Image (cartoon, rainbow, N blue to C red; front, side, top):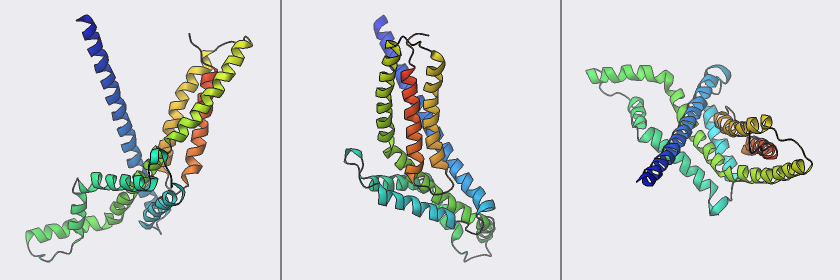
Length: 244
């Protein structure tokens, strides 16, 4: 009975850990989406007023062109273009169609035929408030799809981070063995900070790329972060200290 209780507690602990990690991931992604929309809105109001909503349309076209041109073959026979398009469609359907926000937008954009009724007056009033915000709403729709395309690219780039990290682990183990054979001292002052920095840099790669207010080729963002993560992994492994 004691063994069964211990196993059950361990299983509950594992499920709780997985659920907490999933919740944190979704929270980070949702925060990145809100940040990207907010940056676009601030840019429309202050930085690229002459472009307006056309800026988000251009971003969407550029991100789609990057994927169609440079991501033709994925891992495990995965079609990157189809995966990216499916991600964008899923984000659009889940955030705007399922919530009936698209229907509300269409309702507000339709002309009012009967303006003398109380319903007509209500619709005219709602349209008067909505019209100044229409381009910001469309920009949010576009940035949601841009976010989904970039998220698809990041998911497809995970093997790159893994490959670079594996090479760094091998290199770090070699350096660690050379240090031990040379009677070098182990130190936890570098091992623990670099191990934490790996998580921070990996998270920063996602936050930066998902929230960029301009269109940049994914390789210019992902590859430097992958190299930085690998360098930190290699340093952490080379300075590994078994005991504090």
